[in-house]
Length: 146
Image 1 (cartoon, rainbow, N blue to C red):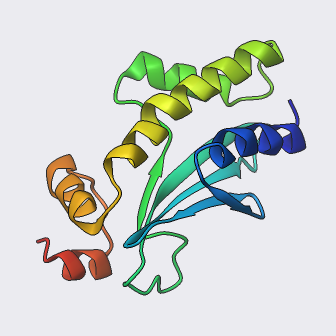
Image 2 (cartoon, rainbow, N blue to C red; image 1 turned 60 degrees about the vertical axis):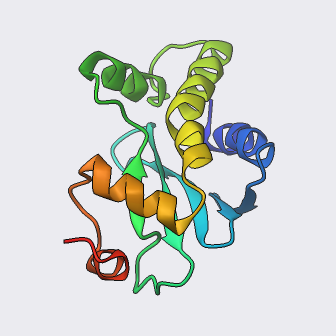
C-alpha cells in the first residue's frame, strides 16, 4: 500500500462516520468539540502513525494542531507491537489483511473513543480520569484541571 492508497482507505472509513477531509486530515465538527484524525508518515521509513484527538471549539489553539493529542496505540505491549507492524508498509502483509487489521484497530481505539466523547463535559471527565501526561495549559485552565 502506498501513501495515496492509504489516504483513500482512511477516507472511506472516516467519511462513512461523518468526517470531512481537508488535505490528509479528517475533521468532525461537533457543537463544542472537533474530533480530528491525521496520519503522520515517518521520516525514517515507509511507516505511519495515526494521530487523533480533539479541539475545544471555544479555546484558541495557539499553534497546536489539536488541544488533546493521542496516537493509535495500546497499553498492551504485544498489541502495540502489532499496531506498529501493521502500519509499517515495509512489512509483507497482504493489502486485504493490512486493511482489515487497520480498520479493526481504528474501530476499537479511535472510533469507540470518539463515540464516547462528544461534548466538553465528556472530554473533561475523560481527561480527569485517564491520567494523560500532557494536557496543555490552556485546556487545564479552561476545565480547571490541576
